[in-house]
Amino acid sequence: MLMTMLQGKITLVTGAGSGIGQAIALAFAQQGAFVWLVDRDEKAGKATAMQVRAAGQQGEFAQLDVANEADVFALVGRLPTLDVLANVAGIGHVGGLLETTAADLDRLHAVNVRGVFNLCKAFVPAMLQRGSGSVINMASVAGIVAVRDRLAYTTTKFAVVGLTKALALDHSHTGVRFNAICPGRVETPFVSARIAEYPDPAKAYREMSATQLNGRMVRPEEVAAAAVYLAADQSAMVTGSALMIDGGWTAGK
Image (cartoon, rainbow, N blue to C red; front, side, top):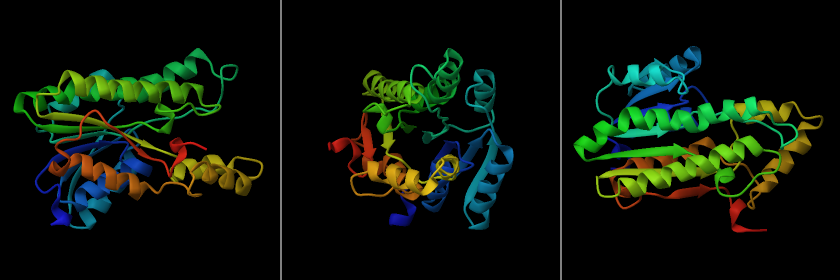
């Protein structure tokens, strides 16, 4: 049945307190998985966990800063071997070379790249030992094509795509799969808050929506549907991919 694609699987989703991470965590639970909901924001993460349990599904919250290597490895001892690891936590920055400091780049790298590396380093060995598992890393269209005035963000998302492909190549015969999802602009609370800061929010919203060739932003639930597919056994032959969910953004203009 469609509603049990992940029945019995143990999953972990970082950034599960809001936006794409929350949508993926809820979708995994709806598909029958037990979900470990991980977020740095304790209040937001616990709220998502409550949503899961209120719907009669299975999930627990664990507070974690993915950039903190020691805390990530400490979490391993609390959890069973994972079937699915979804690295969704990430941060952004607006600016080109002149507006971006070394500290800005380091901050984004710590979360967007080292965070993914830390979780993989901690949880993938058990998957390899068992001979099965799916790792889903959240990248972006900015990991495929450069996005104007997003130098640090683009740099880190290219790194996530490269990291994912390297992992897939290195472990291609192990039964563990590694894939990236590359969304266009997604209509999340974070994005909405940033749009509200523009002098003309309505104009900014139209311009950002127009980046997708079909004229609207991606919905978090649409990204979550892709994550469910990559987590499920039905995608057994998919590894090393960078799945675009961008409304045609990268198809050309």
